[in-house]
Length: 336
Image (cartoon, rainbow, N blue to C red; front, side, top):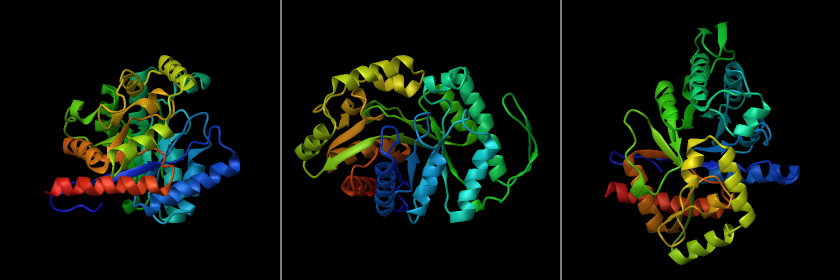
């Protein structure tokens, strides 16, 4: 969706399938398919998960780059897994080998049990302090600086990145903006703060000085009833999933997880729908309904200043085609 003089620039990212529970051959084909659908739909990039149960996200990023024309991997990066120099080296290596930009989704901690297994006991807010220090080293290296740094968490001396990162491929930086610590970190490193939104009518305007975005699934069709029929077939009620979600909430110290877990929106009350999250079928709210109704809700997020949308994993190229129709109608609303 190209910007005009009056239209804010909205960027769409899709999400790559998770490897946990998938068969190897099926997973590789699924990643390639979703990446190609996303590329053809004009998405800026695609989120690649990282946690103890997933394959290495940088190898997935390489797979995505090799099978698409311009799609940018949005790689989840967290300090427990890699030294900041290694992250910068991955970014500049992909730029050197493929001429492709990478986005970084900076993760303060991920799942608490993952950190416990790695003997990382850093408290929640302190993890954001670490993330600021971590990201600062990465961006300084990618900017071509020779970095000497002695901080609370990292120490480097006259560190230089080779090959150099082309300035036009400097990575976009995202970070969770659901907690005060996350917002402070976003401001400190100049990142786009991503949140799991409430219904648009309950969202306050974000604080100034930080670019904002949301993570949300979309199922939209011309007719409202058709969209809800698809949504309820795709995400049926599942008691086992509900119990798993309750357990996950108890062991998580994530602000967004706790916020979403107290929502009880159901089908029919509006486009905002939490059933997929509540049944442990996905990790974000959904917007469901007619093109116009969903576009109206999306337009309210855009009006508040959320200009980045990270979509859920598409099930087919049709998902992205219908989503593009929603955003085309959002653009028409904005320019009226």
